[in-house]
Amino acid sequence: MRCPNCAKFTGLETEIGETNWDNSADDAGARLACAVTVNRNCADCGTTLKSAEFEMEEEWELPEGADPETVGLVEFDAEATESGGGRYAKNMIGCIAKVVIRWKNKAKPGKDGEPTKEEKINEDTITLHDELQASGFEEC
Ligand SMILES: [Zn+2]
Image 1 (cartoon, helix red, strand yellow):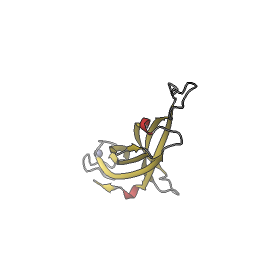
Image 2 (cartoon, helix red, strand yellow; image 1 turned 180 degrees about the vertical axis):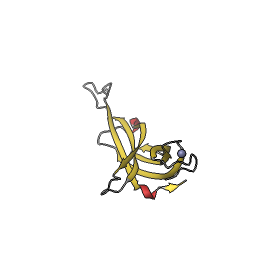
Image 3 (cartoon, helix red, strand yellow; image 1 turned 90 degrees about the vertical axis):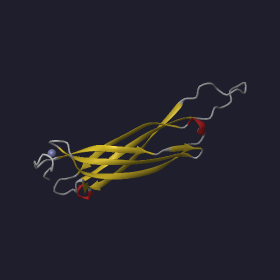
């Protein structure tokens, strides 16, 4: 398409724009939600020409034996994805959002009835993915 800023017929580069994370953890587990804006920018001058917002959600259940007090959502990452675009596959553009969850298991009583000192940290990565046809992106 023609870029209104630099007036060139240009390719588009896909990048992650604004990302909003809205996550919470409680006794039952965690609720992961995010809204990610994916921008398609002029490859020449960087002006955003098209964009779309992806809203994704996932529930994470507290595993057996986990201590709800220790559940923490520690890492958030979003990256843009692109696939297809050839003659036989539709050009799909989207994003993958990753959330890393860490927790400890409930301390088990040791020999003398006292809880054992250090429980190991468990980790799980939740991946949310959504995509849209390139033609579904709105012009800015
Ligand atoms: Zn441009």
